[in-house]
Image (cartoon, rainbow, N blue to C red; front, top):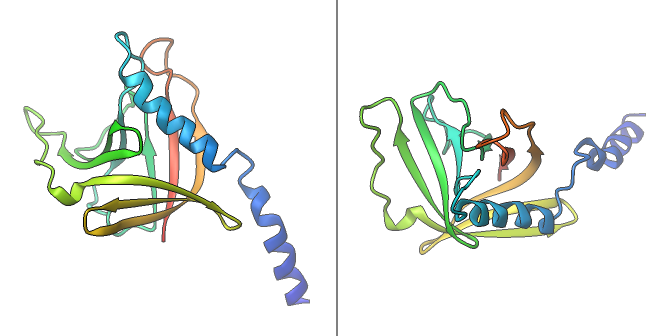
Length: 164
């Protein structure tokens, strides 16, 4: 009985995440991040942010990044994935509650190439710097959020990642 139950769960697991998580879709959203941030009147930023208030970005199993320019935040420490060209970003730490807000100068290992990999287990993001793979994540969800307003919040996504 237990074996049948486990097989049933495994067969249903892909449907738990009904949104489109194919590599091509994730790639198009990341490219849109960069494209929209370069518009003269932009409603997007080139940054995806993580609330690092508890200093857990590098240790937490599941992280959630948000892309909205006007994302309402009430936290003081942020990790940014700042895209500066296709499939490349800088992972930057910024303490937001200091005046003025100042970021740490990125080190060489903070510059990463973003590689999307799709296989039968799902879609994965590998962050690779000059020293090799820095981090691997399985994409659990990529949710488009309802805009806060009609202006600066039109590009609002949550990217849910499981650290591998």
